[in-house]
Amino acid sequence: MYEAPDLSGVAEPLRSIAERCLDKNPAARPGLDELRRILRELPDTDVPAVVSVVPVATGVPDAAEADRRASRTHPFAPGPAADEGRTEAVGTRTGHGPRRRRVLIGIAAALAVTGVSIAAVRLGSHHDDASASPTGSVSTSPSTATVTLPPKHVQWDYQIGGAYPLAAGARVVSRDHDSEPAPGVYNICNINVFQAQKGEERDWDSDLLLRDAKADVVYDKDWGEAILDIRTAAERQRIAAKLNSWIDECAARGYKAVEPDDYDVFTRFPKYLKAGQAEALMKLLSAHAHDKGLAIAQKNAAEVLSDRASVGLDFAVAEECAEWNECGEFAEAYGDNVLVVEYTAKGMAKACTGWGGTLSIVRRDASVVPKGTGGYVHQTC
Image 1 (cartoon, helix red, strand yellow):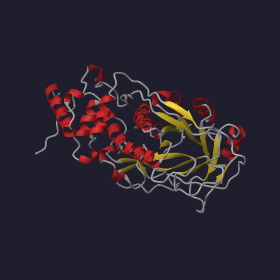
Image 2 (cartoon, helix red, strand yellow):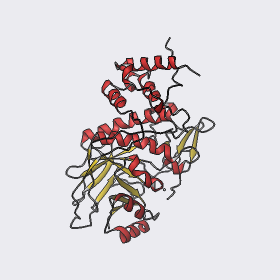
Image 3 (tube, rainbow, N blue to C red):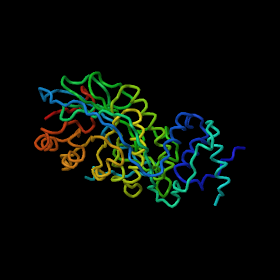
Image 4 (tube, rainbow, N blue to C red):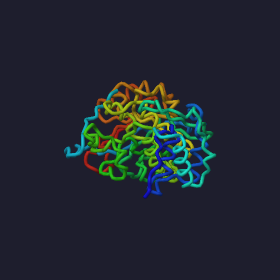
């Protein structure tokens, strides 16, 4: 009978590594190359990733009119009625003793699964965060990867709900990670990070879904999506392992950047989640994206703009920043490398008046449906 080693006395991040190595599902275990990389990157201190950034040559298209596009990740439809065993919360946009010996045996067994010697692991007191809060700390190691940023102040489109031909003059597009990139333009790969896609809860381990005091899954009522539980380092490592495989797919398809969605989840579910927990997961994703040569966007969450460098973020995708009077904050933080999406006529008017000469702006319908679909809206300044 298999008895899982007791790893409760192992400090993070080593415990998370050992847990992954011991996963009952062989497919979930890290490969040799990945494990070696993880072990090499175990830091002594919290060090932000250092990335060489290569901006794309800018240039405003001759005409700022184009009829086009779009798509989305979350169709704007009412969430499903609450079922027994699930908790729905309405998200509102704000500004949108075990002994050491047994521990070592457990880690040795875990590493043996992938053929790596226990000597490769540094068991130092500087890794001990046993007294850490649920926020925990996630470190990223320096990277020498070179990433390319999107061009500034250009025509762009938001197609995260379905790909179709871009309008003439479009220079940037964001699409869902399952879609192929558009030829000849800067492509951004959108991935669901903090919430499971609607109807895809079973794609995630049950214990990675956020639950309330009654053990019911917490849902985003607007989109009918289960919230992921990012409160511990071990959970974040497991979540990141899955998300990083999507980032790998983005890189393999030829995308230049990744757009992790729902970064502002802590503002919508403050009863459960904290900003530091969201940032810790984003650090894991940014380090991996940079290793793959991809830039990474900050999607909304103006509340944590001041932490952008330590988290490793490169540019911004800001929904309704004019509507919420946040465009200035994003523009200052990212040197005008901000891609704006507005969803109302009022918001679009404010965006074009205040930022039309500086930022990349598009108006879309709230459901971000593809062209040719009822309710489709696309407008540029």
